[in-house]
Length: 266
Image (cartoon, rainbow, N blue to C red; front, side):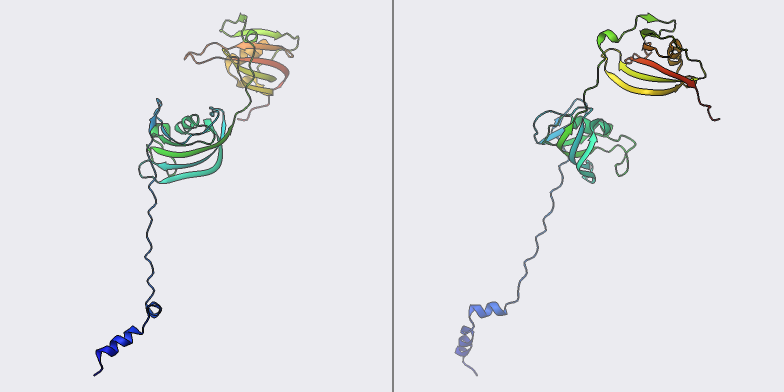
């Protein structure tokens, strides 16, 4: 029988370095890192029903309804945080998106990041769309990178907006330039230059040249307008007020030429 001292001596010869050589490698268990759930609430309500949180403030001017913006964004369902859309350097007009998103964009400044909490009434409503269910509240995280504004619309001077004469139907008119050419008939197609403008503010809403207008296909009030004119003349027409009280649009028309209207297909 061997002495216990032999055993001790034997183990004493095994240095810590040798123990490390023979010890099985112990792999560290990976620690699962759960992603933080998205924040689906906002702090500041607005009168329209939108609420928002300023994540990072921006600087400078704010977009308006006619601006074209460039943004980074992510859209999520408020109910469970499911992401349904995202974009990087996406470009679109402010008035081309859902009302809640448009309202939020008009609060922002370049360089700013906002969280927008949009109720269904300011989003896609009862209809929903694609991955967005009916009556779904939405959350967008938006970074405004830049925006541009269109050039200002021309304005008709105050002295050139009104009409001094009125027909029995209530159509107002002013002869801007008289001419002695032929007047349109119902079978004609009129070639005209048109300028449509807001009656009270004078802001030009539409301007077109060489517009082809068959008289048989226009509204009675516009047919009455054209029938008053002679080829080569320019008139300003003040439209009767709408029954619902909506703002009036007045029209400046130059009658360039008259041609037979093309035959319509049955």
